[in-house]
Image (cartoon, rainbow, N blue to C red; front, side, top):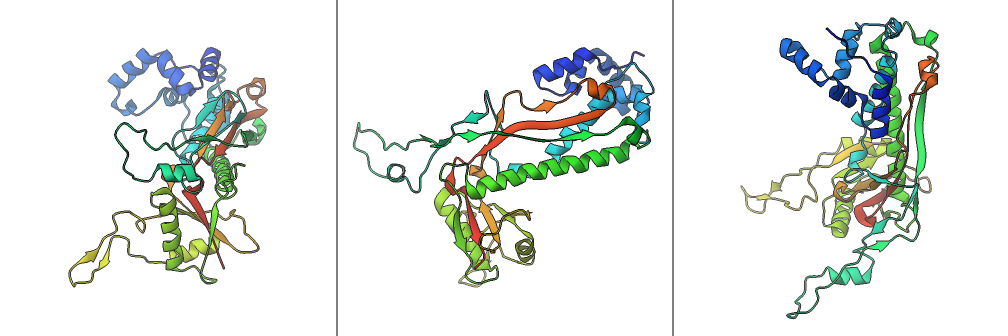
Length: 352
């Protein structure tokens, strides 16, 4: 039975097309993979890369040195590293709670964001009011505006570097956990970048507005006021709270009825169809900066969150001679930035 071998051209093809090596292997060995699966039901959930690992006797109990027991598949370990690193960065990322939609790829490192202000822009505020329009007249027009300051994308990432001698006796499973730990750290750093843009804006006078708690402790009414303020601005319920340690603990100990309460007449209930006080995702993040020594938390509606921009060709999956020489094992990096198109999608709640 022919083996699935990762060749130089597969790597080049994956990099040029910006897709995983596994997808390239699936195309190159389509017939072989289909034939194997038809003969062995246990392989139904295996992808092309997993089959290549199996062909060379690599399992989770193998050691790193086993990748290099043969010279016919030199790319097996670098692709394993790349796959593990990139999969885990995305798997554990909390970014989707703050970013709306898919990332947008742009040709350079600078982009002028487009903004819609329905709160402070008097023209837009008037345009969205429901009003009678005479027959044949133009409808009120809300306008999108380009930001005064362009958003500059920054490069960030992490290199994973080690000598072959230092890891050759690690098991695949223990090494995978090390890579997952690094991937989690990369994902958390990216989330911290997004939190900073939510609070301070992207440079276009769109820092988050601030509410202050009534007392020095977090109370139910503080959260309800925050939720109503977010709803008034976006007409969408607050569904995400990002809180530092003390406020996360306070929130964890709160019990608020969200689906209804005893009504005015026994047997009846209040219901809240707008979702202003319905379920909220609470995320712990202790990197939220204090203001004047006071702790802050963020309330947001994920529906109108940030936009992520990525510079075209900047997502680096580094396969080079150093990797094949068993010196540098891999890197993950990209040039990216966040735009805050809707200023009012989030508010800060600051402790008194």
